[in-house]
Length: 286
Image (cartoon, rainbow, N blue to C red; front, top):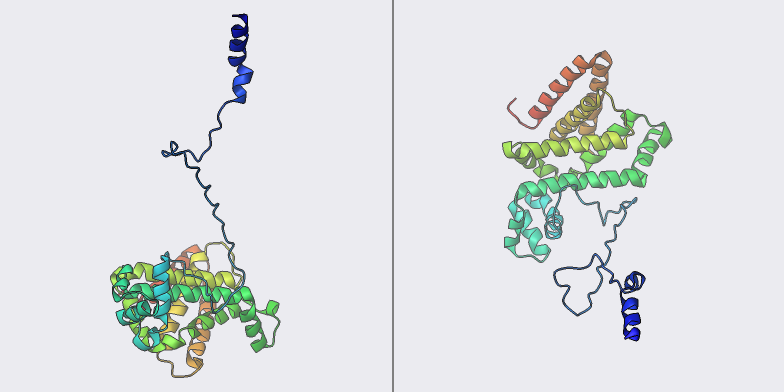
Protein backbone atom coordinates (compact mmCIF):
# COMPACT_ATOMS: atom_id res chain seq x y z
CA UNK A 1 0.00 0.00 0.00
CA UNK A 2 2.81 2.41 0.79
CA UNK A 3 4.30 1.57 -2.61
CA UNK A 4 1.03 2.49 -4.38
CA UNK A 5 0.81 5.75 -2.43
CA UNK A 6 4.27 6.78 -3.57
CA UNK A 7 3.33 6.04 -7.23
CA UNK A 8 0.18 8.16 -6.94
CA UNK A 9 2.10 11.10 -5.57
CA UNK A 10 4.49 10.93 -8.47
CA UNK A 11 1.65 10.97 -11.01
CA UNK A 12 -0.15 13.98 -9.58
CA UNK A 13 3.03 15.94 -9.11
CA UNK A 14 2.47 19.26 -11.08
CA UNK A 15 6.03 19.32 -12.30
CA UNK A 16 5.56 15.89 -13.80
CA UNK A 17 2.34 16.96 -15.53
CA UNK A 18 4.17 19.79 -17.27
CA UNK A 19 6.43 17.24 -18.91
CA UNK A 20 3.59 15.38 -20.59
CA UNK A 21 1.41 18.40 -21.49
CA UNK A 22 0.42 18.12 -25.20
CA UNK A 23 1.61 20.78 -27.62
CA UNK A 24 -1.18 22.74 -29.36
CA UNK A 25 -0.33 24.08 -32.81
CA UNK A 26 -2.10 26.57 -35.07
CA UNK A 27 -2.52 23.89 -37.72
CA UNK A 28 -5.32 22.21 -35.73
CA UNK A 29 -8.55 22.12 -37.76
CA UNK A 30 -11.88 20.35 -37.74
CA UNK A 31 -10.07 17.32 -39.23
CA UNK A 32 -7.79 16.93 -36.20
CA UNK A 33 -9.14 13.42 -35.51
CA UNK A 34 -7.58 12.16 -38.72
CA UNK A 35 -4.56 10.06 -37.82
CA UNK A 36 -2.83 10.72 -41.14
CA UNK A 37 -0.06 13.29 -40.63
CA UNK A 38 -0.65 16.53 -42.48
CA UNK A 39 1.87 18.11 -44.78
CA UNK A 40 2.77 21.61 -43.55
CA UNK A 41 1.62 24.43 -45.78
CA UNK A 42 4.23 26.08 -47.95
CA UNK A 43 4.94 29.65 -46.90
CA UNK A 44 3.98 32.18 -49.55
CA UNK A 45 6.97 33.85 -51.12
CA UNK A 46 6.52 37.52 -52.03
CA UNK A 47 8.52 38.34 -55.12
CA UNK A 48 9.92 41.89 -55.08
CA UNK A 49 9.01 44.25 -57.91
CA UNK A 50 11.49 44.19 -60.74
CA UNK A 51 13.67 47.23 -61.13
CA UNK A 52 14.32 46.48 -64.81
CA UNK A 53 12.18 46.50 -67.92
CA UNK A 54 11.88 43.97 -70.69
CA UNK A 55 9.75 44.30 -73.82
CA UNK A 56 9.12 40.56 -73.59
CA UNK A 57 7.73 40.84 -70.06
CA UNK A 58 6.05 44.23 -69.64
CA UNK A 59 4.71 45.15 -66.24
CA UNK A 60 1.10 44.12 -65.75
CA UNK A 61 -1.62 46.74 -65.61
CA UNK A 62 -2.81 48.15 -62.31
CA UNK A 63 -6.34 46.87 -62.95
CA UNK A 64 -7.14 43.55 -61.36
CA UNK A 65 -7.37 40.71 -63.88
CA UNK A 66 -7.24 36.98 -63.42
CA UNK A 67 -4.57 34.94 -65.16
CA UNK A 68 -7.03 33.82 -67.85
CA UNK A 69 -8.20 37.39 -68.49
CA UNK A 70 -4.61 38.64 -68.70
CA UNK A 71 -3.64 35.93 -71.19
CA UNK A 72 -6.63 36.66 -73.42
CA UNK A 73 -6.15 40.43 -73.33
CA UNK A 74 -2.42 40.19 -73.99
CA UNK A 75 -3.01 37.98 -77.02
CA UNK A 76 -5.83 40.23 -78.25
CA UNK A 77 -3.58 43.32 -78.36
CA UNK A 78 -1.73 41.91 -81.37
CA UNK A 79 -5.00 41.99 -83.35
CA UNK A 80 -5.96 45.55 -82.39
CA UNK A 81 -4.05 47.31 -85.22
CA UNK A 82 -6.08 45.31 -87.76
CA UNK A 83 -9.45 44.85 -86.07
CA UNK A 84 -9.49 47.69 -83.53
CA UNK A 85 -10.62 47.45 -79.95
CA UNK A 86 -13.49 45.13 -80.86
CA UNK A 87 -15.00 41.79 -79.92
CA UNK A 88 -13.33 40.35 -83.03
CA UNK A 89 -9.88 41.15 -81.60
CA UNK A 90 -10.91 39.61 -78.27
CA UNK A 91 -12.16 36.44 -79.96
CA UNK A 92 -8.97 36.05 -81.98
CA UNK A 93 -6.92 36.66 -78.85
CA UNK A 94 -8.84 33.95 -77.00
CA UNK A 95 -8.17 31.50 -79.84
CA UNK A 96 -4.48 32.37 -79.89
CA UNK A 97 -4.31 31.73 -76.15
CA UNK A 98 -5.98 28.33 -76.52
CA UNK A 99 -9.41 29.32 -75.17
CA UNK A 100 -12.84 28.79 -76.69
CA UNK A 101 -14.55 31.76 -78.33
CA UNK A 102 -17.07 31.88 -75.50
CA UNK A 103 -14.22 32.65 -73.09
CA UNK A 104 -14.44 36.35 -73.98
CA UNK A 105 -17.41 36.41 -71.59
CA UNK A 106 -14.83 36.28 -68.81
CA UNK A 107 -14.36 40.00 -69.51
CA UNK A 108 -17.43 41.76 -68.07
CA UNK A 109 -16.72 45.08 -69.85
CA UNK A 110 -15.90 43.47 -73.19
CA UNK A 111 -14.10 45.76 -75.61
CA UNK A 112 -13.66 48.44 -72.95
CA UNK A 113 -11.57 46.01 -70.91
CA UNK A 114 -9.27 45.73 -73.92
CA UNK A 115 -8.93 49.53 -74.02
CA UNK A 116 -8.19 49.72 -70.29
CA UNK A 117 -5.64 46.94 -70.62
CA UNK A 118 -3.91 48.82 -73.44
CA UNK A 119 -3.80 52.06 -71.46
CA UNK A 120 -2.55 50.50 -68.25
CA UNK A 121 0.02 48.26 -69.93
CA UNK A 122 1.49 51.22 -71.84
CA UNK A 123 1.83 53.09 -68.55
CA UNK A 124 3.74 50.12 -67.18
CA UNK A 125 6.08 50.11 -70.17
CA UNK A 126 6.65 53.86 -69.77
CA UNK A 127 7.60 53.41 -66.12
CA UNK A 128 9.90 50.56 -67.09
CA UNK A 129 11.76 52.71 -69.62
CA UNK A 130 12.37 55.40 -67.01
CA UNK A 131 13.52 52.89 -64.40
CA UNK A 132 15.84 51.36 -66.96
CA UNK A 133 17.32 54.80 -67.63
CA UNK A 134 17.28 54.63 -71.43
CA UNK A 135 14.48 57.13 -72.04
CA UNK A 136 15.98 60.18 -70.31
CA UNK A 137 19.43 59.35 -71.69
CA UNK A 138 18.01 59.44 -75.20
CA UNK A 139 16.12 62.69 -74.56
CA UNK A 140 19.24 64.30 -73.08
CA UNK A 141 21.33 63.09 -76.02
CA UNK A 142 18.91 64.66 -78.51
CA UNK A 143 19.28 67.99 -76.72
CA UNK A 144 23.05 67.71 -76.26
CA UNK A 145 22.73 67.69 -72.47
CA UNK A 146 23.52 65.48 -69.56
CA UNK A 147 20.62 63.63 -67.97
CA UNK A 148 20.87 65.71 -64.79
CA UNK A 149 20.66 68.92 -66.84
CA UNK A 150 17.14 68.16 -68.11
CA UNK A 151 14.49 70.47 -66.70
CA UNK A 152 11.19 69.24 -65.35
CA UNK A 153 9.36 70.61 -68.42
CA UNK A 154 11.75 68.79 -70.75
CA UNK A 155 11.19 65.53 -68.89
CA UNK A 156 7.42 65.98 -68.96
CA UNK A 157 7.49 66.79 -72.65
CA UNK A 158 9.66 63.73 -73.38
CA UNK A 159 7.37 61.44 -71.37
CA UNK A 160 4.28 62.80 -73.10
CA UNK A 161 5.73 62.22 -76.55
CA UNK A 162 7.05 58.77 -75.65
CA UNK A 163 3.58 57.74 -74.49
CA UNK A 164 1.95 59.20 -77.61
CA UNK A 165 4.38 57.32 -79.86
CA UNK A 166 3.24 54.09 -78.23
CA UNK A 167 -0.12 54.71 -79.91
CA UNK A 168 1.35 54.78 -83.41
CA UNK A 169 0.45 51.16 -84.10
CA UNK A 170 -3.18 51.76 -83.09
CA UNK A 171 -3.46 55.31 -84.43
CA UNK A 172 -5.90 54.37 -87.19
CA UNK A 173 -8.37 52.80 -84.72
CA UNK A 174 -7.84 55.14 -81.78
CA UNK A 175 -10.75 57.45 -82.61
CA UNK A 176 -13.12 54.52 -82.11
CA UNK A 177 -11.44 53.84 -78.76
CA UNK A 178 -11.92 57.48 -77.74
CA UNK A 179 -15.58 57.19 -78.65
CA UNK A 180 -15.97 54.17 -76.35
CA UNK A 181 -14.12 55.95 -73.56
CA UNK A 182 -16.51 58.91 -73.79
CA UNK A 183 -19.60 56.76 -73.15
CA UNK A 184 -21.30 57.76 -69.92
CA UNK A 185 -20.72 54.41 -68.19
CA UNK A 186 -17.03 54.39 -69.16
CA UNK A 187 -16.13 57.97 -68.25
CA UNK A 188 -15.15 57.34 -64.58
CA UNK A 189 -12.63 54.61 -65.41
CA UNK A 190 -11.36 56.51 -68.46
CA UNK A 191 -10.70 59.67 -66.46
CA UNK A 192 -9.18 57.61 -63.66
CA UNK A 193 -6.72 56.05 -66.11
CA UNK A 194 -5.92 59.45 -67.60
CA UNK A 195 -5.28 60.90 -64.14
CA UNK A 196 -3.03 57.93 -63.32
CA UNK A 197 -1.01 58.60 -66.48
CA UNK A 198 -0.63 62.31 -65.66
CA UNK A 199 0.40 61.48 -62.10
CA UNK A 200 2.95 58.93 -63.37
CA UNK A 201 4.40 61.43 -65.84
CA UNK A 202 4.87 64.13 -63.21
CA UNK A 203 6.29 61.68 -60.68
CA UNK A 204 8.71 60.16 -63.20
CA UNK A 205 9.74 63.68 -64.24
CA UNK A 206 10.75 64.40 -60.64
CA UNK A 207 7.81 66.65 -59.76
CA UNK A 208 7.15 65.51 -56.19
CA UNK A 209 5.95 68.85 -54.76
CA UNK A 210 2.82 68.65 -52.62
CA UNK A 211 1.09 72.03 -52.55
CA UNK A 212 -2.11 73.77 -53.61
CA UNK A 213 -1.33 73.20 -57.31
CA UNK A 214 -0.95 69.41 -57.04
CA UNK A 215 -4.28 68.74 -58.74
CA UNK A 216 -3.92 71.64 -61.14
CA UNK A 217 -0.64 70.32 -62.54
CA UNK A 218 -2.17 66.89 -63.08
CA UNK A 219 -5.23 68.35 -64.74
CA UNK A 220 -2.98 70.40 -67.02
CA UNK A 221 -0.91 67.37 -68.06
CA UNK A 222 -4.12 65.35 -68.53
CA UNK A 223 -5.59 68.05 -70.78
CA UNK A 224 -2.40 68.30 -72.86
CA UNK A 225 -2.23 64.55 -73.35
CA UNK A 226 -5.96 64.10 -74.12
CA UNK A 227 -5.99 66.90 -76.71
CA UNK A 228 -2.70 65.65 -78.20
CA UNK A 229 -4.27 62.22 -78.70
CA UNK A 230 -6.95 63.78 -80.89
CA UNK A 231 -4.28 65.60 -82.90
CA UNK A 232 -2.28 62.37 -83.18
CA UNK A 233 -5.14 60.55 -84.92
CA UNK A 234 -4.98 63.15 -87.73
CA UNK A 235 -1.19 63.50 -87.86
CA UNK A 236 0.08 62.19 -91.24
CA UNK A 237 3.78 62.43 -90.36
CA UNK A 238 5.75 59.28 -89.62
CA UNK A 239 7.29 60.45 -86.35
CA UNK A 240 4.29 62.51 -85.16
CA UNK A 241 6.03 65.79 -85.94
CA UNK A 242 2.78 67.78 -85.93
CA UNK A 243 1.74 66.22 -82.64
CA UNK A 244 5.09 67.11 -81.08
CA UNK A 245 4.72 70.73 -82.22
CA UNK A 246 1.22 70.80 -80.71
CA UNK A 247 2.52 69.48 -77.38
CA UNK A 248 5.26 72.12 -77.35
CA UNK A 249 2.70 74.89 -77.89
CA UNK A 250 0.41 73.58 -75.14
CA UNK A 251 3.30 73.33 -72.66
CA UNK A 252 4.36 76.89 -73.43
CA UNK A 253 0.76 78.09 -73.05
CA UNK A 254 0.49 76.31 -69.71
CA UNK A 255 3.71 77.94 -68.48
CA UNK A 256 2.52 81.37 -69.58
CA UNK A 257 -0.83 80.93 -67.84
CA UNK A 258 0.75 79.57 -64.67
CA UNK A 259 3.11 82.55 -64.48
CA UNK A 260 0.16 84.95 -64.50
CA UNK A 261 -1.93 83.11 -61.92
CA UNK A 262 -1.61 84.00 -58.25
CA UNK A 263 -3.53 82.60 -55.31
CA UNK A 264 -5.39 79.39 -54.67
CA UNK A 265 -8.67 80.77 -56.05
CA UNK A 266 -7.20 81.47 -59.47
CA UNK A 267 -5.48 78.09 -59.52
CA UNK A 268 -8.79 76.41 -58.71
CA UNK A 269 -10.52 78.32 -61.50
CA UNK A 270 -7.79 77.35 -63.94
CA UNK A 271 -8.13 73.73 -62.83
CA UNK A 272 -11.87 73.77 -63.46
CA UNK A 273 -11.45 75.29 -66.92
CA UNK A 274 -8.80 72.69 -67.68
CA UNK A 275 -11.14 69.89 -66.60
CA UNK A 276 -13.89 71.26 -68.86
CA UNK A 277 -11.47 71.47 -71.78
CA UNK A 278 -10.33 67.93 -71.06
CA UNK A 279 -13.89 66.63 -71.21
CA UNK A 280 -14.57 68.46 -74.45
CA UNK A 281 -11.42 66.95 -75.96
CA UNK A 282 -13.00 63.56 -75.46
CA UNK A 283 -16.31 64.60 -76.98
CA UNK A 284 -18.26 65.21 -73.77
CA UNK A 285 -21.20 67.62 -74.01
CA UNK A 286 -20.03 70.15 -71.40
